[in-house]
Length: 437
Image (cartoon, rainbow, N blue to C red; front, side, top):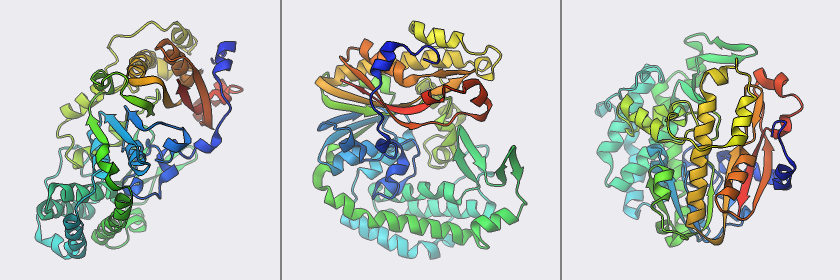
């Protein structure tokens, strides 16, 4: 691995399957009915289930926006998903909960009337997010909040309200002055150029992005989203009763796995947060606050502390297990690098400790001969590549799986500041499916 790849590691490598590259992220099914309702870049394509040959009872302990459960419903399987992120579990539940014909009819009426009704309602209360006034232009913010008030007041049932709220959440980034990128959000008033970001002229970029009538831009975005969701009702109907067989649990994967009855599942498939310092609560903070999933910075802190130790805001002070191979990698990192100074070694020890527990839990809930598929990406710090896929494979064997195979699916780019240090070893920067049986 990074100079320490052994013959045993080479024996874990299976032939690459580049055809899976488009299925291990949200974009692979971006145009598919139901899946397309909310862009969740960390999600799977529902088609991945068939490609991996999974069984009839599936567990996804990091389910995100529910792609595995959607795929299970469409393919006549049953699935349980777990996620600590309340935004993710909300999106999953709405996608898995067909609304009644009465609610469909009420939503169609809402679609016809909402534009003329907006001026008659007061804006929804502004959340306490400190940047709330920065992530939307004033006229857009006013329209967004009025739309929220209207849908809350108009919904005939809780199911219809959630359906409308998901449509509303789905357009926030599109109508906002921000967008998700990397480990957080960026602002549209700055443009990426070689060498960094430069400011865009105020007034010009807004008109270029939103047009002359910003309120009309919001109304049109919401109308398109709601029309698309209503058009997908037939996909709900096509899967028949299988939607009711899917279950979503909001909670910490480590805690919830311990509650699952042993040998309950034929397959486990998941993509944990990668050990790349990305704090997904940070990149999703607008939707979390505006959707009412968090109400204070203490709420945000609690979510971060409950999450997998993949980012610097997690509970890095927790217990760790002894992993000599990881310690060897950390010892090779440049001690003057920003990664080492920012406590990345503590992050990595916490991450692989958590993954050890997750894999042990997955092995316990699988039937004999069951399969566990883990989608992971490798990372690089301080001039050293951390081969997460190989480490996960080894930890899986330690957890009691009889065999492990690392199936590379695509190459990952190396950060510009590390390209010279990693030259000749870029092949290890990859995303893989680790298959444990």
